[in-house]
Length: 115
Image (cartoon, rainbow, N blue to C red; front, side, top):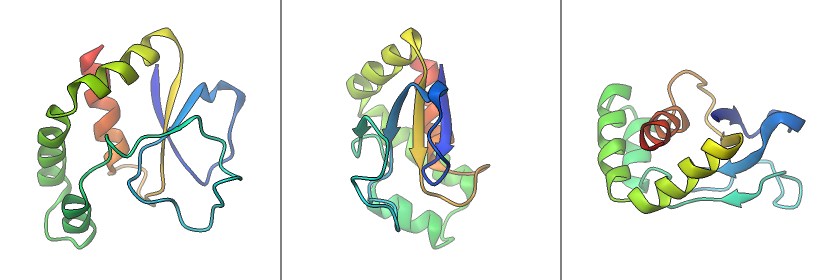
């Protein structure tokens, strides 16, 4: 199972394998304080795409499409994480404030399609 969670929410026993999927380290959290098993920058959106979305140059639909195109080049990395999600729970950690429109949701959907 692949799920998403804000990095600022407390870790839970059922989170399973916790992966930070942001390219930048989240503000206000020390590296020693974050309970995560992996920091995967490879599957995070490119800096240019992130800035375009957060700068409101593009909307979420355009962001999602462009991000999926970026992810297509990361098939092997994605398959590894998707396989882990088939065996147990994988929690994708993100720092975005918007819990309904963010890159982790797009990534989770993409990973599920690989499984």
